[in-house]
Amino acid sequence: MRILYVTSEAFPLVKTGGLADVSGSLPAALKHLGADARILIPGYPQVLANLRDPQPLIELKWLPAIGNVQLIGGHMPDTGVPVIVIEHRDLYDRSGGPYSDTLGQEWGDNALRFGILSRIAAILSSKISPLVDWIPDIVHFNDWQAGLTAAYMRYSGAPHAKSVLGIHNLAFQGNFPPEWVEKLGLPRQAFAPEGLEFYGHLSFLKAGIYYADAITTVSPSYAREIQTAEYGFGLQGLLAHRARDIHGILNGIDTQEWNPAKDPYLPQNYDGNSLDKKVRVKQALQQRSGLHEDAAAPLLGVVSRLTHQKGLDLLLHCAPALLEQGCQLALLGSGDPALEQGFMLLAQQHPRQVSVSIGYNEALSHHIMAGADMFVMPSRFEPCGLNQMYGLRYGTPPVVRRTGGLADSVMDTNEFTLNRKTATGFVFDLATPEDLLATLLRALASYGDKNQWSAIQTNGMKTDLDWNRSAQAYLEIYRSL
Image 1 (cartoon, rainbow, N blue to C red):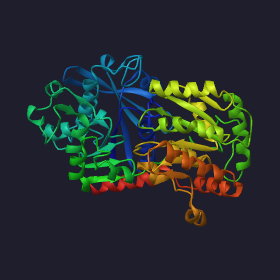
Image 2: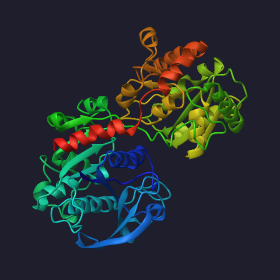
Image 3: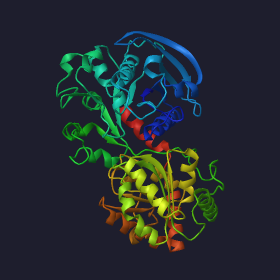
Image 4: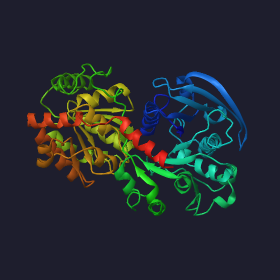
C-alpha cells in the first residue's frame, strides 16, 4: 500500500511539538509493516540541512500566487523513510520556526505557505500525478497546516487517492480571512457552511473535517471528547455528524529513542530489572539542577509547554503545600510569561527545592524523565500526550488528569489495580488545584511504600507502547477505504 503522509513537521528533521514525533515514527512503523509510506514536508532550512541523500525530483509549475516549486527527494536520517521536500525560498527559507519568526510572531502569509503544502499533496495524490512511478493509494494529511488537502482533491476533478485527516489538536484550526479562498485557487462556492466557511473565516481544519474520507485522532477518548461542546472548539456539531468516520488510535512512542537502558543522555542506564540504578540518575539530576541531594525526597518532574491547556497553573497553586511535604520540583518548559515568572519566583524562594529551566533542552528532558520520581501532567485537555508514556517507559509514574490520551494510557493506582498488577500512575478528575494536590498526596503515600512503588514502576515499564500496535490500526483504516 502506498501512503503519502503530509505534515508540517517531522522529527528529527524539524520539531515544535508532538506532531513531529508522530510524523517521524508512524511512517517508519508503517514501513516496518510492509507499507510504502513517504513523507511530504515543507523545505524549511532545518529540513534541507537534515535530509539524507537529497536530489531533485520534479518541478511543479503555475501554482497559485507563487509560480514554480522544486520537489526534492531524500530520506529520513534515522529510519530511511523516503521524504519529498517542497523547496521554495520565498515561502520556507526563513530564520525562525516553521510557523513564526524569531520573535514568536506568526508569519503573515501562513495561509499561503500551508495552502501550498495542501495543494501539492492533492497534486501528488491524483491519478495523473507528475510522479508517474509513485501514485499513492492513501493521502494521510495532518492538522490544519495540511487541512485543505481533501478540498483541493475534491475540486480537482481528477480521480485521486482516498484521504485521511489526522487531528492532533483541535484547538489549532488555521482560520484566515475569506479573501484567501480565491488567492489559494479554491472555488468561491466552496466558501459555505457545507465546506470551508467557519464563522466568516476560511478554516483549514474544518475543510479537512468536511472533505476527508476518514478522520483519525490520537486517542480513543479524544475522539469522543471532540464531539462535545467542552472540547469541540465550535466544530463539535460537524464532528458529531461525521462520528462514524472518526477513529481514535492511541499514539505509540519511539521505544529506541526513549529507552532508559540505552539512553545516551543519562549518566546511568537502567531497566526494569535494575531500577535500583535509577537513584543515581536522580542524584545526578539534583546536582545538575542545584537541588539538595536527598535520595528520599520525592522529586516531581515536569517537561511541558507552560500554557493554560497543560494545567501547570494548578501545580503552581499547590506547589507550596507540596514543598512543605519535603517534595522537590524540576521543571523544563516555556510559554505563558505569567507562568514562567510564577515558577521562576517559586525557584527563587526555594532554591534548593525547585529548579526551573525556561526553554527546551533535549538532553535535560530525558534526564528529568529518568531522574524524577513521578511525572506531573495535569492537562485540562490532552489529545494524546507522549510525555506520560515516556514516564511509564522510564519507571517514573505519571500523575495526570483523566482526559484524552492521558486517560487511555495511565491506569490509576487503587486496591483493584494493584491486585491486578495494572496500576501504572495516578489519575484525577477535576481541573482544580485541590484535586491535583489530593492526588499528588495519594501518590506520595504510595511512594512511601517501597514495595508498592516498585510494583507501579514495573507495571508501567511493561506497558506496550511500541508504534507497531498503532500502525496496525492505521493500516486497517486505510484498507477499509
